[in-house]
Length: 168
Image (cartoon, rainbow, N blue to C red; front, side, top):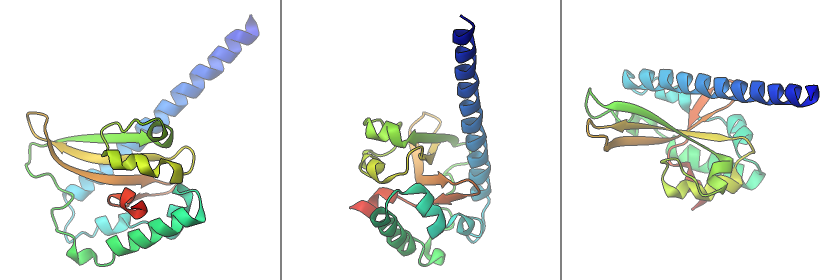
């Protein structure tokens, strides 16, 4: 009986710990998005440029990593071509919604609001990887703008716009 209670307690502590980590990441990403809202000349956006080291932590095999590195380099080739308002809401009263989906959810066909094209990258991701997107909503709840995909490594955030396109 005591073993069952201890085991149940450990499971509960583990669950609470996972939720706290997820909430901390969401809070961090909201801070990142708020900085993007006030970003001039895409200076803050440039800090989210993925590194090869970071991409190796997210994607699981050399072939996948190389595809994403090549795609990312192409997308980030000239940050001056990225419109200044690309990460900002269209209206001041837009509501921010953060979407998140895990590799295991994608493998199960669950997108949690991400475009269905993200299902194709599930097999290329490291286990435990989560994808994040920011979505701005109009007052009626309709989508105003969505930007994906943000990844969190142990020490920083990075964005690979429409990462699924690396595998098309």
